[in-house]
Image 1: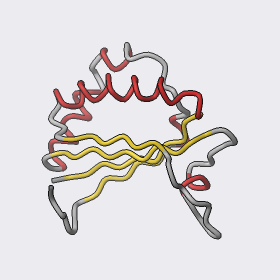
Image 2: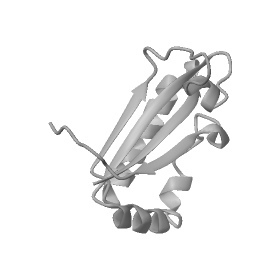
Image 3: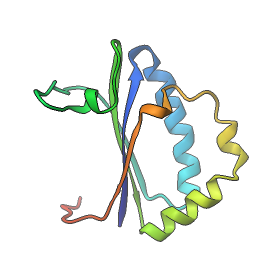
Image 4: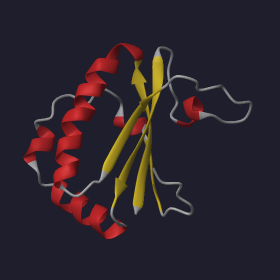
Length: 117
């Protein structure tokens, strides 16, 4: 198992556009071997005294935080998918990205402990 995680600032009025964008993209990710994607819209994201999600992505007034993760079988599968997806024209046709991709945070992780379903 290999996990790619994202923190993304999205304008509050773009929630439905983001949901549609994510739903369309997840079908493509599945084709490339992604096992699971969870897209989470801010519900309780407190402001910290030193750092927090908003500061990390330079969230602006009226933006909410999306926390999302993708579960892949392994790192090699993700890396191969990224290479193939770069040439997939369907990602270009997916429409306008409903957030500023320059401010998103991405990190990939090897699980240390998993409490399964």
